[in-house]
Amino acid sequence: MSNSKQSETGAQNQMSPAAMAALEKAFMAMLSSLDGSPAPPQAATTSTSSGGKSATTSKTQTTSKLEVGLLRASDIAFPSGNNYYDHSPNAPFKLDEEELQGYTPPAAVVDWRNRPLSDADVDAFTRRSKMQSKAMPPSNDPRGTPFCIMSFGADNGSSTAVFCDPPTRQLLRAHPLHLAPLHVEPHHSAIPIYVAASPTGLGLFAARRIEAGECIFREPPLLVVTQGLSSGVAMQFDDLIEKAMPPRIRAAFDALTNCWPTEPGGRGARLGKMRTNAMGVFLSTTRSMENPFGACFQLISRANHSCAPNVNFDWEFTTFQGSLVAKKQIEAGEEILLCYVDPKASKRARREEILRKYRFKCTCKKCGPN
Image (cartoon, rainbow, N blue to C red):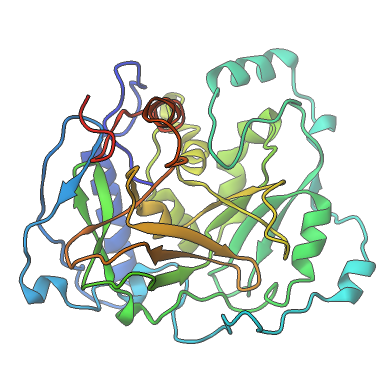
């Protein structure tokens, strides 16, 4: 989720949109060096903004600027392809029962309750990090409970880092894709989007007309984090990400926006990126959100907010992919917008939640400038 103009009480250490754009450009340049391809074109846009997020209107672009294929293999953290998974409702899906029944406590469990962490350290960090996200409210127990850090997907440099409790780890180890390659679908040359500047930083734009009901793309998450992230874990989060993520996945995660304050030297930026960009997902076949996790995506998390969105977010545990599905027809050059809150809530409630969680005043076409 891209950042917007900060409120007057925002953090002094917050990166500016220009700095975030420079970081994204450096990330793209680094990945481009892998295949020697030129940087993808960016479409010029005009917009009206009253501060914070705003409704966006793009100029009519030439065909060369809107052709399909603006995403290259080097732009995407995961490999892409067509029809790697069966997305039909009747597609077979079976957990490994032997793995589920043969549970043994993993050696990589991190138990922060036994860590020598002073009460003063925990209290100070808790005061500094009164952060909330729609996916992960802070844990009531600063010392937390034992949790695992695991990799989901093939060991090919493009796997998902998962922070979870031991039972969830065992469930994921029984998933048929646990050690299988993860893919973005469709092939990158057919994904009808591009990343370009918007009034609120960087955003996703349609590279062609997208029909209502069309699944625009599917992608695995870069990171999945348990709901009850304790202060003890949060204090070490930046360092844990460094160790848990493959370099290519970590570079994509680091290119995401952070709307939360950081400590001197930028420490805490990765924790802020996680809270800024996490989408609520379930790690079960029941689609229950009683115990949600937060998932950060390279492309989906780049979508900006509107209380009148033109896409919906969907998550499929069986294929371990999130997707964007068009709510209505989206024209070429139009920005792709998600709703970060309940669109049925009152304007006041929506604005209060957006300001509390994402630190900007919503001025989308549904809320208006006032």
